[in-house]
Image 1 (cartoon, helix red, strand yellow):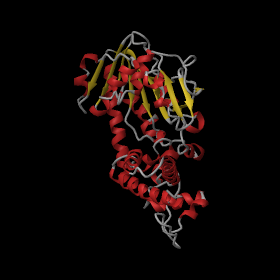
Image 2 (tube, rainbow, N blue to C red):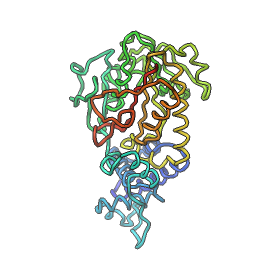
Image 3 (cartoon, rainbow, N blue to C red):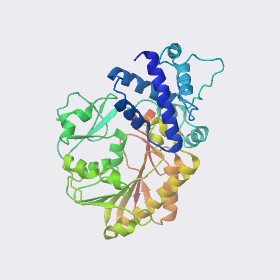
Image 4 (cartoon, rainbow, N blue to C red):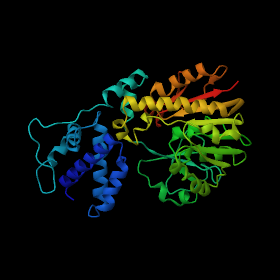
Amino acid sequence: MTPAARVQTAAELLDAIIAAALSQGAPADRILSDWFRTNRFAGSKDRQAIRELVYRAIRACGPIPQTGRAALLRLAEEDPALLLQFDGSRYGPPPIEEGELVAEGGVAPGWLAERLAASDIGDVEAQALLHRAPLDIRVNALKADRASIALPLEGEPLPSQQGLRFPPGTPVERWDAFAEGLMEVQDGGSQLACEAVAAQPGETVIDLCAGAGGKTLALAAAIRNQGTLIAADTDRARLSRLAPRAERASAEIAATVLLNPGRELEALEQWRGAADAVLVDAPCSGTGTWRRNPEARWRLDPAGLARLTALQQHVMDVAAELVKPGGRLIYVTCSLLDEEGAGQVTAFLTRHAGWRAGQPGLPLGQPHGAGWRLTPAHDRTDGFFVAQLSKP
């Protein structure tokens, strides 16, 4: 493909990504993967160049752009060399017309940028949310140790106990160590959030929003398969991915529980008031993960955020019923908005008399409200809010 043809293809793919964002359709990665699979004429260098163009254009636009072409013209304001490809050549984009529409820049849609600023996310922190993320792994302590594991590349040790960092795009999932369950891909901030649970061998630990089980596997390693670990979620498809992952990691899960939304405690009745620790990795806006999913900025609106905060409140209340006296609830969101973090904890403490908030004392991050916050600019991790709550 010519450079101009790559630009035109990127514009068309961006059109599909914009349409999917507006309709809550497939994510950008899936749209790109589907196109590459069905258009074999695009070689590996073409695919790499197109993917890079698409994601650079997404990051360059704050509000959702009107068209893919408008998004690329916005990117061209940062990279003027790109303008040379709008030459009207065969398979390339038509020449630029005077006064043509250019997408708006910025960190996010206006209302969302305001919410970030109100949550003490300044310009430097906000811009860092759009930088490309490194690739972090967690060495599986059930099978290996960070200090002695043999890998094709040497990773940078992270402040988490078993974390290593590699450059973006490192093909770690092709390594033998991955196939053998010696490691998992997991952001360093996510690893620290799991360490905030302080799970110990012999404890009963519930991962209440387990999803596909990334944090569940970290908890299994923390308790050394010596205790009772329960993984629960309302999403059958995501939860079904845990079993093969657990087998590969040699992680022992005592029970995998599919929950009925609104009736979660019925399925978890046998563990009511019995858990030493409950991890609530709550469904959230994902504002802290924009480095990996920059088009997520275009999928959120105020009504959607309100639904998420209501769900977070509900899940925290469910978790409180599962914690035994003297036990702990660890609340985590990969969001930097206060209504999903510090504000939720303040409201929880108002609803639940006697509960106390303590700082998790992580090696990265800063106190924020009644919890702890990790940010890309300050900590070189995804954005996280973590709170450790103790039951009287």
